Length: 365
Image 1 (cartoon, helix red, strand yellow):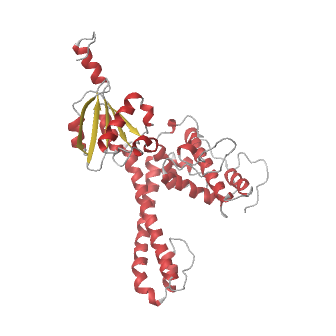
Image 2 (cartoon, helix red, strand yellow):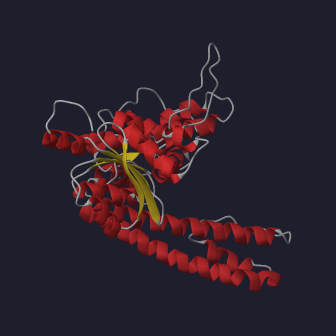
């Protein structure tokens, strides 16, 4: 028993209000460690990773701080714990190196370390914010479409590789036109092997078109702010909707320039003395949105990109030469595009393609 001057009831309220739980989430079972107000372990155990089990374990408790690592289950768990009245912190996995690099790593120890970090200072776990349940469901439409597109790409590459193995090549064409362009030129010896691939690609094309219609309808009816972002040539319904749903709330960022670092489009740094090496980008944040922005930047920088401030900016960087100058320029344009999209979202300004143009456009490389 603690020797202090507090009454029993005051001490109980203080202890309960200051309790902290670390929750190491697994696919089937999750381990938890509960610390009392003095940092002592009050309870340890495991619970099934289901909504019913979590309600039974934490639903009857007074408000606690619960820290869990980001993952497949962290979104619904954070919303459930908040619904039950707890303070739910989702820890950034990239920042929890003490857990991943520990030589005594196990679920019980991970849960305890999460609880101790969250108890001392919530910022030590670099808490992230999950989007709403509706936004998560809508984003799943985009991710489903992305799976279809990547599956189609894998099938097309497989078909090209099979044909190359016999010394032939399939014509260069878009993914949408692939089946119609290659069917007449398939070597007879490979007809049996490639027919199932072509039929699957044709089916996936139909599914992607249906997904595109669904995305367009979703953007128009539920997220009208995407219309402002689509005024930038190269940014369509998929990218604009992914941007809105990933960021979720533009007020999260006080300055639009913060988007570059948030999406991992800024260079890594490892300077020491006079040594300042050129490193790749950090690749933090959402990889799907980053990939979409880089694709938009490639269109802006490509032969069919219109004359805009973004294109001129990228071409100036590409003309500086050096190793991988074109790649660095594309990433820089993607970073600048993210900043511009956020700015347009915040202000709803009319996009002016050549707002900052003061000199003739540089020639494309």
